[in-house]
Amino acid sequence: ARPRVGYFYTGKSNTQILSDKVKTITVDHYKSRPVVVNESSSVYEAITTMFLEDVGTLFVVDKLATLSGVVSRKDLLRASLGQQSLETIPVGVIMTRMPNITVCHGDDFIIDIAKKLITKQIDGLPIVKKVTHGSGYEVTGRITKTNITSLLVDLANNESI
Amino acid sequence: ARPRVGYFYTGKSNTQILSDKVKTITVDHYKSRPVVVNESSSVYEAITTMFLEDVGTLFVVDKLATLSGVVSRKDLLRASLGQQSLETIPVGVIMTRMPNITVCHGDDFIIDIAKKLITKQIDGLPIVKKVTHGSGYEVTGRITKTNITSLLVDLANNESI
Image (cartoon, rainbow over all chains, first blue to last red; front, side):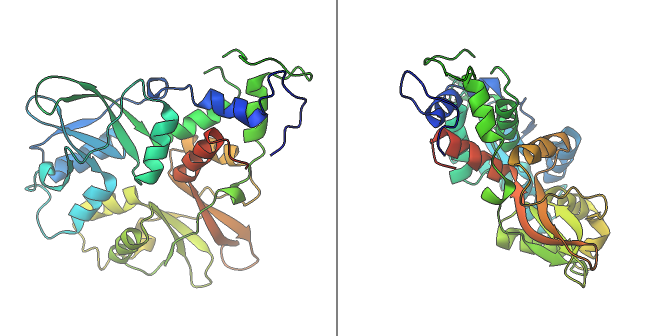
């Protein structure tokens, strides 16, 4: 697209300005609160939590309350097709387990996270901070395609971000 | 945020330029292909289709191949908790049915659709064209938060859109 409304003294194009702005926004500006379940919870409890909290991704924590896994609506749907009773299978059996989890940090740029969500085909990521016990990560937030969509709406609404 | 790189002859701020640009993009630029099932398909078939096609939203069509419903991963997960056999319940029983469906058109602005996805808390919408038979809508595409996320990535990458 060509600039339609004058030009800059700096020689930067409109699209450059736009991308410069988008690139400065961090995850902390658009995160949601995390919803967690214990590794020993049943798949049934996980599904119930997902509905009660109305989220698409749950984070699973160990006894030390550090991140041990991630479970998505897709994982739970797959599990529900199985022959086993959902009340007896622990969510730890069906979750994606550390270290196979993509995590992010509050000061990561949101645009880099958007790219990860697209390339890895996942709906949401845990925002973590490093700790020295357990898995080494405490969960502090959640970032999803919904947050990214909200960001785009704010950009279009010309909000100060 | 303040403009950091000079100014325009037009007096427009950077954020105005940015929002002007975002507001010109239509659904047709960022749509995905629709994945449909028949109203008479079982819930089990719908879940299988969702996994095989790797989508989060299915569109349900009637015998005239016009839109009769929408079914999400959440709907299917809820159904899978029930006591009935997934092979015997038709997807038509659990879907969201016309006219309670939000639809959009290829020439709608994507930013308006992004707002609808946020306010209605849904993951994806059918893109339709009007016809004079059946429900009055044929499904031509699908637009989801994934498409919106891709758009933001392209904006930041400074792509010509």
